[in-house]
Figure 1: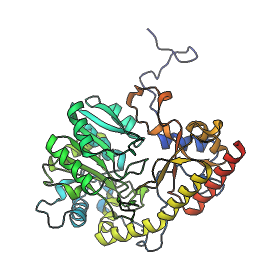
Figure 2: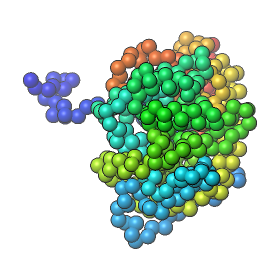
Figure 3: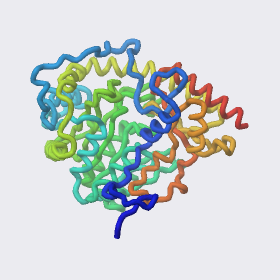
Figure 4: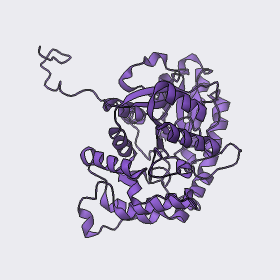
Amino acid sequence: MENRGPEGDLDTLHAFRRVPRTGVIYVSTEADARGYRRGDAAWSNLGQGQPESDALPGAPERVGDVAIDPNDHEYAPVPGLWDLRAAVADLYNRLYRRGLPSQYSAENVAISGGGRAALTRAVASLGNVNLGHFLPDYTAYEELLDIFRLVTPIPILLSREQGYRFTPEDLRREVLGRGLGALLLSNPSNPMGKVLSGDALAGWVAAGRELGCALLMDEFYAQYVWTLGTGEPGPSVSAARYVEDVDRDPVVLFDGLTKNWRYPGWRVTWTVGPKRVIEAVSSAGSFLDGGGSKPLQRAAIPLLDADYFAAEGTAVRQAFGPKRDLILERAARMGMKVDGAPEGTFYVFVSLRELPDALADGMAFFRAALDQKVVCVPGVFFDVNPGRRRSQHLSRFRQHVRLSFGPPIEEVSRGLDRLELMIKHAR
């Protein structure tokens, strides 16, 4: 039978499927269609998934140029430059594994051209397993979990009544009850901003080790930690601290220059894990993406210094903490509810339930905000739904939006002013 297009003409492109845009990309495309341009002071982008990348007080000097060695015109090795891999391993050992007998080496690290590339390599390397993922979580996980047919995505619903917490005992129950072979999650979590640390994170790593469940942990917001259960600002977090044997514990970590160094445009990221896993993800990279940028990998090596990382983290927390406080205070004043202040990331996931009916739906709020030249991300995009097997109309996050305090504080404040006026007029 012939394939026909919407107007009855022969569809010559029927071999291609419609590929959905992930949440932030969808939002950006809609904003672009309304005239949004980055840097335009007429707009406020509270939907952006990147931090402000200009100089911050107390932060190391920003890189202004990149020297290109003649050899940099050649391909980089698919697993990445050896010296950069060694620098990543050394940073993790210095930050999280001092005094421990098992240490990471360059062979425990693979370099990728962006976070999605790193995650795609890892999922492509999984076998025929049940892969657990949380609701809500990072929007890009949705399509990622749908394209590799060996993997069966298993959603795990986090409870608002339990503060969206998930204990090591909960993990054991899910692994044993649903037969999970792997679990994908962000920590700190996007969009909720929950942070796993201390005994809880150690318990997760122990459960993964004892039950043979691989923990794929997206740690791209590890420097953006506001509280560690004590109310005090916290340093960076990583499951690397609780790994016993770097080559046997099924713990695979993802990070890069994107958020924690505030160089998203470099697209330099890494995977840290057992050597056998690194060999697999490198092999996957050979057919998926072919490796990252050689000049930028070389330029990244000095940035992996532990003192540089610490100074950048301190500056980030000092600059972004007040923006977090501003959004929380203003959101409460506007009648938005927050199910627990974010402990990490630069996002606030707000409920619209108590707003006027016209604005109580995330997609409606998003479109109304665009009319005010403000960008945000509807909560339904974080209801990770591979293959669209569940009805979006039943999403628990239909009445939420994510607000970002990634932009400079002036832009954040400007956007909040406009949202407040929009809500006031709706009332």
